[in-house]
Amino acid sequence: KITLFWFRRDLRLEDNTGLFYALQQEKDILPVFIFDSHILDKLEDKEDARVEFILNQLLGIKEKLEQKGSSLLIRHGKPENVYSALVEEFDIQAVYTNRDYEPYAKERDQKIEKLLKSKNIPFLTFKDQMIFEPGEILNGSGEFYKVFTPFSKSWLEKFKQNSIQPLEEANWKNLFQTSALPKVSLEDLGFQKTQIEIPSKLADQEIIRHYDKTRNFPAIDGTSRLGIHLRFGTISIRKLALKAFKLNETFLNELIWREFYMMILAFNPQVIDKAFKPAYDRIPWRNNEQEFEAWCEGKTGYPIVDAGMRELNSTGYMHNRVRMIVASFLTKHLLIDWRWGERYFAKKLLDFELASNNGGWQWAAGTGTDAQPYFRVFNPDSQTEKFDKDLKYIKKWVPEIGTSSYPKPIVDHKFARQRAIDTYKKALE
Ligand code: FAD
Image (tube, rainbow, N blue to C red; front, side, top):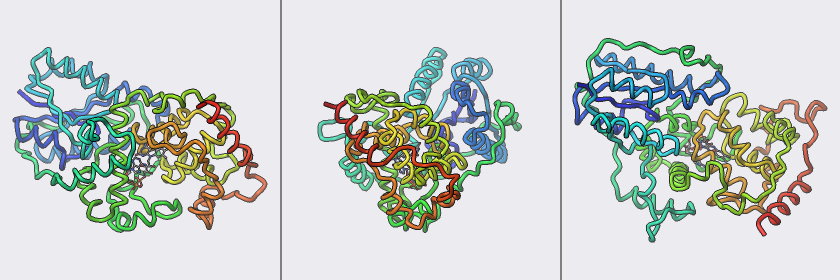
């Protein structure tokens, strides 16, 4: 008999809750990862740095497990089909895994749990990717918070009361002993290598220490670049939050935003394609396709917007300040549906996280929980003046600024601002 530990977005061996408890409570643990074809088939671009990143992490984990006399089972397919095959192939005692709160993940897990139940195999799930999962932080009436500030206060209080600690070393001797299992290559998965560089997971102490002073300036290396590592669990949120608590409250606050948006999505799965505030679904978006293309390509004639989009297109990353500016520009200046921008980001961002991306877009469009009021329209020039005064960031990505090859502004700022306000106002009347 073996027990499976199913890796999903928790790709690390240390401080991994589900894996730790599997090794503590059962014998002969065999870790498994499934490349989910429901997800991979939807990725149009077969050069996807995220798939490459996942595979590299898994191969690293596999090697470490092999040093401990075990291995990692890697499968590719629809999870329900993979599990139907696994229960035939192995005598499975139980399946351990960490909880995932996205709507698709919850549906998938319900299916797998049902399938396993029909074979009398328990499916045990653990909290790992969040400090406090949806439902743990509720307001005085027992409801979920719709506004960030009181949520963050409760979160922080609870964090101080609970002594959150990383787990000790796991009981590795309970791993299933086997010779090395087959490797999988990117080509086997239908993908190709990319040239995109993944930021290191060793967030510099100094970056976190000075985060509150540096985080708003895109020309400075002043944020952690840990997004992709939090997305795929290559770092532990517990370790990071404890470090943040010691070093910088503003940084910790960003980790709370991450949990706030995860909670909002878990309680309101409809936000995936609907405005959090339903009235905002009445906005008659212009959805001009050529303008959308110019925005995607970084050719709007607004240097800060273009710099951001070009950074995204070539690195898979965009600084948070600039994400806010480009999202506001798309939804307000161009009156293009936030869902279009959200989808584009989802394709390109290495740190794409459904909950934060949706939250960020709905915030910028004014349709979300804590959103920017609709009559506040970012002025790209004053944002540049405040956050990239010397045009250092802009010049890096838009070197042709000031030459005749740089496009004229796609729309006049004053005109666009008024058009946005009038359109929102009318739709919300
Ligand atoms: P740091 O500034 O070093 O912050 C550390 C971590 O805190 C981040 O990695 C992230 O996990 C979390 N965090 C920081 N800011 C936020 C925030 N506003 N909301 C939620 N979590 C936050 N973040 C994503 O992780 N994935 C996304 O797909 C995503 N899409 C966004 C879309 C828009 C339109 C906007 C305005 C913001 C979006 N964000 C998203 C939030 C934020 O921009 C990124 O988390 C941040 O820029 C990532 O860089 P970093 O890792 O250096 O973050």
